[in-house]
Figure 1 (spheres, rainbow, N blue to C red):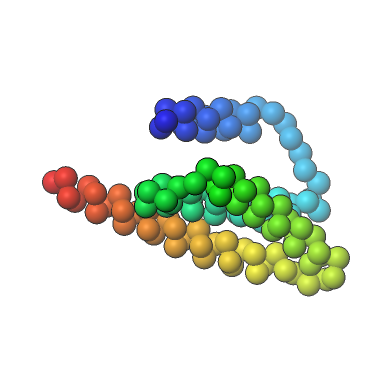
Figure 2 (figure 1 turned 90 degrees about the vertical axis):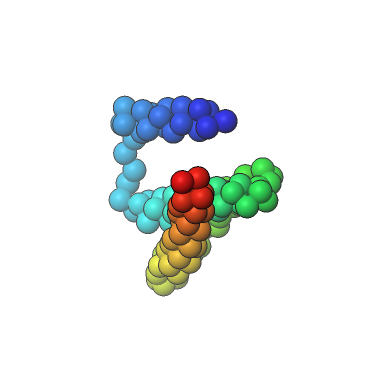
Amino acid sequence: MVLIIFLSLLLGLAVGFFLPINLPPTYTSYLSVAILAALDSVFGGIRAGLEHKFNNAIFISGFFGNAILAAVLAYIGDVLGVPIYLAAIFAFGGRLFTNFAYIRRYILDNLTKKQ
């Protein structure tokens, strides 16, 4: 399982570096919020896996649902002239750091228990 994850990561990095995909500057805020939402789902999935509560359907629906919802809210905010994407950045960013802190503590606790 871990091998599949690392191979997928390497494949994604290779595709990202070698395919010249250019986005117009107007889409950068939507993409950045969608990527942040997707990363939040990934870290939440890792945390759920460590807690033995991982559910694939919840992860997939949260991954795509959060990314789409964040991009749509950023678009609506642009149409209304209100920077709603900042709220999404703070919400997803806060959860991302919370999940990362939990993962870090879990790994460090397991490393110190083995010694």
